[in-house]
Image (cartoon, rainbow, N blue to C red; front, side, top):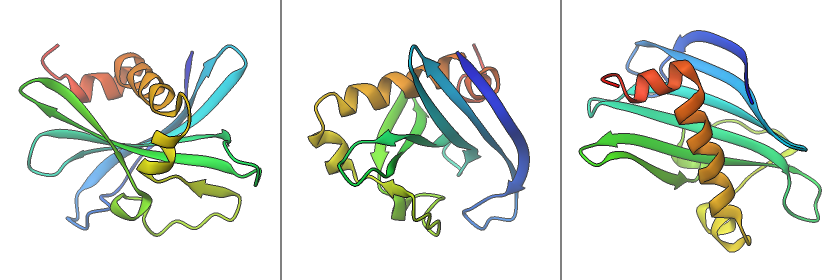
Length: 138
């Protein structure tokens, strides 16, 4: 189940001066809940989505983890990439209780990649505004 907490227009983090939608919410599957934060952008190459997934701890340090995914539309549909914090709209965010994972850290976790893309797909297919943004012709 997807819940939307907030939706507001914000200055585009790329510095272009445009207002873009920023959405936050959560996805619940059974006993797990994942918070998400999304920027709906068009950087000149069509609709693209910056998505940050916030989960519980993955490591013994007990910190919640954040994973960044960038999704772009292309002739084959939707392509999603695991990205690091420094390459994202959240590059300047520092939250002591949150560990941004690198692509390598996600890939090293058993089931990590599958989990990220399962949650990503649920959001991009079932959140009404995000789905319409990424597939405007559907």
